[in-house]
Length: 400
Image 1 (cartoon, one colour):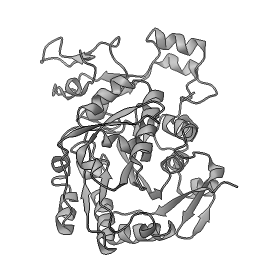
Image 2 (image 1 turned 90 degrees about the vertical axis):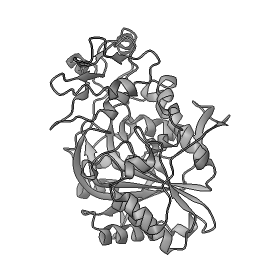
Image 3 (image 1 turned 180 degrees about the horizontal axis):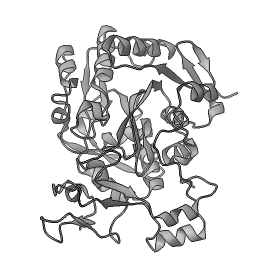
Image 4 (image 1 turned 180 degrees about the vertical axis):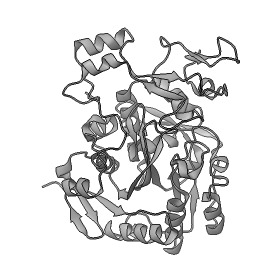
């Protein structure tokens, strides 16, 4: 019988330091101890989700208390060589964390926040989708990585969690280039799986105390989920996340391809969920800690002849859409578009909102991720679904 992937589920309804610290300490013990995962002589990179500069209570970034309490635990257990970094969507590590409280924790613990300076080309001949990456020199110099991800929705992949957090390993503008190299949800997911298998983070910890629902990963709405998750299997961790929000985990491309490519498992029968009170079934975990009203894309996308034709003709597809009355003409959407000749620009002048050329648009939703304007509910740039897409609902996963 194959060994199950263990996911630690930690009920936690507050970001109070002592509560977060105690839960993280219990979680590490349930995993067998951090000493059995990372050697004390090893250099460690802490990798939170630092998408962009944002108010902490907006749930855009990994909460500073989760990062700070985990770093404190590591320090108290004798880990000396640690640093924190991310390849942010907009800004640098030091700029994004400034004023959030994360910088204060790092200063107290004498842990440097690194701004990546140099990209190094690495070959990965074992890759299924990606045979090479451009990774930060500072990342490659570390012995191991611990991923501190955030529970959020995502326009392209449905969710961003443990597997997706690793995209912050890619250096600088090569992140934007990656969206043009891997424009579909499936090719992008396979690349992410290759990336995780190359870097091999030792441990994944998910901040789901307050998650982001709706128009994530940058402009959705905070949604209390009151849990932290912890695992060495990122696919299993993301699968528990999916189950808690009543989303079929197989419909998430990173889960589907993650299992196919050997990164982990999304299947409930192959996952062992452990809480401080003991082992619990997926069904009971969902009943006790799940949220069926969590705003996430649960539509089933089929891949038959008509769907392929619609894709080829560029119709009935999810697409970014600008609400003119909310647009502040900042140009961040234009700047963040990875398409070389821009799929969105100010062709009607800066006094008007940017305009999309959907024939060029690759539906990567970088513009939607980085848009600084939001409203309740939703935000200025949102993935707009044509109502005709409802006709395409049926059995099958989006990754198929």
